[in-house]
Length: 133
Image (cartoon, rainbow, N blue to C red):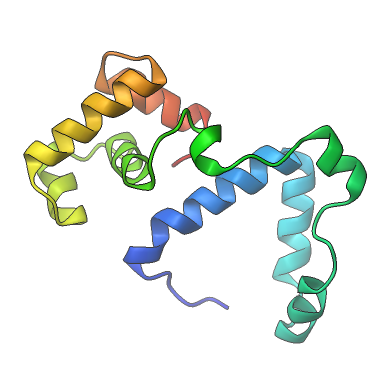
């Protein structure tokens, strides 16, 4: 649609993209992305009524919730992790998410424990490896 994504929805959009890439694989994802770019809104709505994933694929790769897939990170922790991976400071993350810097640090401590890392750079690497940026 070429419409900008509202900032409040950006994290969810990026998470959905990461899930789609993980479930489909890069080749199938890119093919679907290109196909979707050339569809009219009417075609999209018609496509929505059809099963999105064939039975063979869904059996081979069972769907998991985003939270389980990402080591039980909450949606807010995913937002914080994404912000860390883009290089924002705790103060900048706090301002962006409208929370206190202390709350950001608490989220980071929880994230580090859940993903098994001990530094900001390791958390950034995890975010990149899991296509969160």
